[in-house]
Image 1 (cartoon, rainbow, N blue to C red):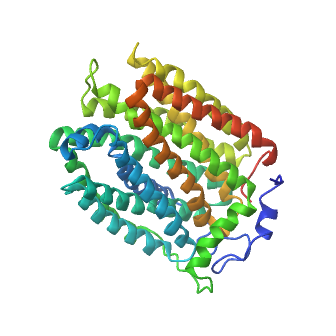
Image 2 (cartoon, rainbow, N blue to C red):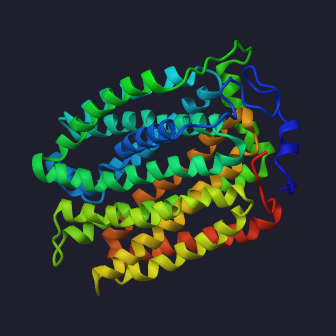
Image 3 (cartoon, rainbow, N blue to C red):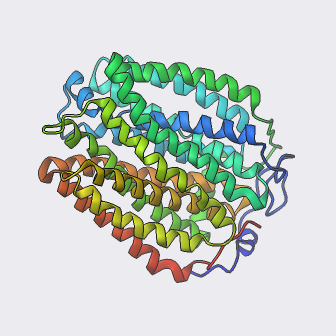
Length: 425
């Protein structure tokens, strides 16, 4: 891989941008004029609600397994199928944000998501449940269309900060999903979680379509197959995209290893916590995740590499208190804060740095990047439950720590092939 000295040369090497903008510029009248706080908040809330659909199942795996007669070793497949659907959406839907009117694309996805959630909530069998989960994951990629839309509208000097704020909404959605799903499951069963979310998805679709700014696209000669093929071209041409995508795979594999299996030791004797109590650990992670929002501002100022290295070091260390949770749940609380802080800081930095490379292809950039996120999450989920069945919680912690250490070593090995700093151009 060749080192990049700045984001600008990368723009001149690639195919012409789609739409009205000149090379190196995002098309549309709203580009670079900034986002109001109200619209940024709407983006964050919509992203949080949408991404929560992927994570509702994690604290409910045991009760879903009992209800639909799924074996404990196989129940991790519920999360895996959702991530598979998410990966398919990243490949086939998110790139459309560089081709179609994002406002309509977002509203349509939100409406279809409500139907998929309804299927899951009414699923009579494991097969229907898994099919519904694939659809839920497929349509949850509206989150990435929203992130790319926001990055395109944000002022250059505030892009990292905007991505950080919206990513905070995503993280809040992920972490609150576990708490909310636990509470609703204790009140009315696991099906109530998905039925309630289906109603919220309809309301959000209406609100987004009414409030989001129009973003009409000019006619373009590029076809849908060419659009998808151009994603591969971005990976070939942009070293920083390849590196950051691999980091995403590793950190979210570690993230999924932890959260997928956490419900199993906490719900079993001697702890025997309720779903509501287990979900409370998601709230604990908010402290670390919200602190990570500042990573975007630091990346705007050119400190992306430093933030990455420090965060990956914290990720490795987080597994020490996590592994000793049997001694005290306070150890688990400390580990959750460190783990979520580290992972979200790297994730925000990754996105800020890759968005600076190709302003005209942000939907394709984030779509390609997030495929690795989804793949890592899927692999982490299925590996976590399998390891837990054979080696218990300590085995899970060894797995998570090993993946985290690999991420740190990979970053250190590839650092010299990346720019020392990247700023918004």
